[in-house]
Image (cartoon, rainbow, N blue to C red; front, top):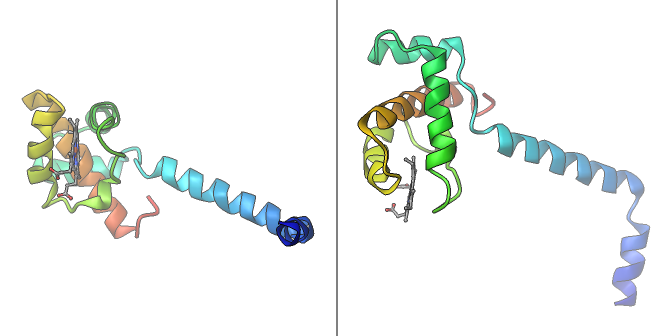
Length: 124
Ligand code: HEC
């Protein structure tokens, strides 16, 4: 107990600051993992769903962040590939009580965000 106390006291301030900064950075990454859609995402999605807009992808994201929480932590969009998402969303759509339109918008968002995160190595 005494040793722990001494070690804790002697931990250099710089280390504490660094640890704090790292936690902040990690926290920020966690929060931004559910990335917002970009024009490039809309362009990518349009190849599959012609005329997809950033606004529609944003709606898909809002649905995702509101309907898919509660049972488990929200997976990052790149937790699945654009090829895998349709099956997963279909399975979960029933659980989350999604309408067909909601499911469609969410799938557009998840697929395009997954594609971009994969291309950029997860940095958004
Ligand atoms: C009513 C609870 C519930 C809701 C709502 C829910 N899930 Fe799930 N989800 C689960 C459970 C339970 C599992 C793990 C068992 C399984 O895979 O069936 C799971 C697993 C998953 C997995 C991992 C599956 C795998 O094969 O790796 C993903 C991804 C996922 N959910 C996405 C979603 C999405 C997207 C939504 C919103 C449309 C959603 N979940 C809503 C209960 C839910």
